[in-house]
Each structure stands twice: as C-alpha cells, then as structure tokens.
Image 1: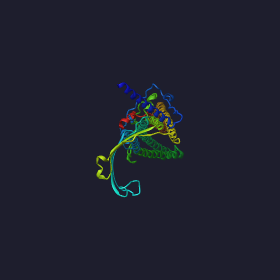
Image 2: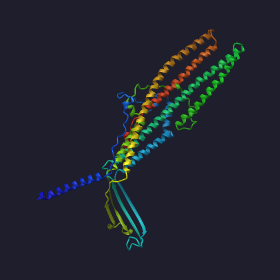
Image 3: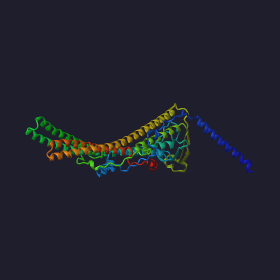
Image 4: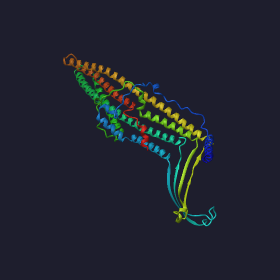
Length: 487
C-alpha cells in the first residue's frame, strides 16, 4: 500500500528541510556582527536652495555657444572639443571607468577555464612518493576543464557591480562637465579678445584726437594764444595714448594665444584672429531658476552618481558579514606518463563546493564597513557642496545679466547725451561761435562713453556665457543608459 511508505518519505523530507533551516540559522548567528546602524548625512533638497519647484528652466541648444551668432566662434569651439588635451584626459578616464565596470560585471558570472600542463620531473628517492616512481624521472600530463560560480545570495556581487557602474556614470558626467567648461572657456576668451579689439579701435581714435589737439595747441602757442604749459601737456598726451594702444596690442596677442591653446593649436596659430564685438548677439535668458536645473548640470549628476556608488559600497561591505558560497567543478585527464594520458582510466572529475563564514576577524570587517560609511557621508557632503555652488553660480550669473541689461540702458542714455553735446560743439565751431579745442574736449566724453559701452557689452556677453554654462549648457543626462553599453 502506498500510504504507509509515503509517510516516512514526507517526514524525512520535512526533517531535512528543518535541519537545513536550522543550519542556516546557526550559520547566520555565527557571523561577525556589523555593529550599530549608521544614518547617512541628509542630501540638500532643491526647495531649501531657493529653486522654484514648479518653474521650468528653458533648455539651451546642444551647441549653446552658437546663440552668439558667430560662425568663427562655432568652428573654434568644435575644434577645441576635438583636440584639447584636457578633454582627452576626461574621455580616457571615462573609458577606464567603463572598462572597470565591465570587469566587475564579468567577474560576477560563471567562470570556465581550460588548462593543459606537461611536466618532466625526477622524483626524490627519499620523499613521500613510493617506488617505482621514487628516484626516477617521468613525464606527467594534465588536461582539465574547470567551472566555478559564486551565487550572489546576499547581494554582494550586485552591489559591487552597481558601485562600479555608479563610478563609470559619474566619469561620463565628468567628461560632459569638462566639455561644457571647455566650451565656456573658448567662448569667454573669444569675447575677451573681441573686447580688446574694440577697445583698440577706440584707443586709435583717441590717439588721433590727441594728435589733433597737439597740432592745434602748437599753432595757438606759436600765435601767442597758449603758453608752454598747454603745449607740454598736449605733447605728453600723445605718447600716453600710444602706450595705451601698445598695452592693448600686448593683451590682444596673449588673448589670441590663449584661444589657440584652448583649441589645441600652436600658440601662434591664430595671429590674425580679429573678432568683432558688434557681430556677437546676446540671446534670451530665463527669468527664474527651476528645480530641474540640478538635473541639467553634469557636475551635479556626477556627484549624485558618486553618492549612489558609495551607497552600493556600503551594501557590499555589509554583505561581507554573511556567508560566502562558492561552487566549483572540474573534469579532465591526468596521468603519470604521457602514453596513458588519453586513456579512459586517466579521467578525473569532481565537485568542490566551498563555504566561507566570518566569525572572528579582529574587527577588520567592521572597520571596512565604517570606512565605506564614511565614504558615503563624504560623497553626500560633496554632493551638497556641488549643488549649493551650482545654484549660486547660476543665480549670480542671472543676477549679473539682469543688472547689466539695466546698466546698458542707462549707459545708452549717457552716450546719447555725450554724442548730442559733441554735435552741438561741432555746429558752434562751424558757425564760428566756438573753438576747435572745445570740440575735441567734448569728443573726449564721447570716447569715454564708447569705452564704457564696449566694456558693458563684453561683460553682458561674457556673463551670458557663464549663465549658459551654469545652466548645464545643452547637455542631456544620458548616464543611466551606460549599463547597456557595458554589456
């Protein structure tokens, strides 16, 4: 009858399961203790930084520097992104981080090896090997295939892989941040060069004006209308103007060399580069900063991935306190004497399950866990610092752009008044109601306003480039897809 025979089988199965559960409980109880729990630092929320949760920050185009409308600048930035050595270093670091994540992913799967060994050996006559092998020389061979696997029962391997992927994703965002910074440096250097060129144009007109003043003062001194004091002052003003021009020429040369270096060219390769400030057009700027700003800046995203990697590192360190199980198997041929290596009797096979359980380790695992927890706190603190700096940088740039817009409006009014006074002085001179010195003196106010206009326009363009860089440029976060590229 089947019933009496099935009852003992069920009872034996139940006892076996109970024994396995008891053994597992004993093993877990015997593990080293990880110590008290650790509460990581808190991450700074977006609303605590003054960002508007519902506001949407307009996205910049992918080539955000192109909004200035200068094709020459576009070409320089493209060349910099291709040939700058510092950017190549960032890309190499990204490739290294991706390769390390691939190594970690490969190590977590089953491993298979095939080995062949041939040995010719003389065996000692006074060792453990008995006669007739002892004291003689023999050839031996071993041909073996092995398979090993470490099941991830406690999530250690998954945590290690996610930590490696987090570092690789952070490196990917770092490379984008480096490209964003490089584009901003090229753009700002280009604007600085355009400003110097515009200031040189104003300085050349100022030199011509002082030469005219010197000529007129010389004529008046010869006619007895001016003294040697006025003549000496007019003479000293000419070399002073030339000194200013020469200083601007020096700065223009250095600015050209700076742009060349940023674009990966020889320092003297752009000796003829002469951008025009009037050809650069500022674009529109956002009115407010939304919370989505934090997801658009690659440096913030990189810091966030480092927090994720450090979190996975804590999980990996905590899993070290649990049993480590390793399963291995092998099959092959082994013989003393190569003539019998391929015989059926030379075959060998086996299974090698292994269990490693930490019990007493002198506090090593707990110290290791404490170190990973400290790394997590440091990563969170660094993230909070990067977020705070990102919001400050974007806010400062936005405030400066808005202020410069108001300053330009006021300066335009002042420049219009100076130009009007200059025209009146010219009309009075043509009508014989005033001297030409008054005309030249009035023109000095016009030139001063032109210098100020050049500086304000250059600052507006420079600050707008800073703002667009602070907003993350045209970068789109694609770091989460890195795991597909790693497979």
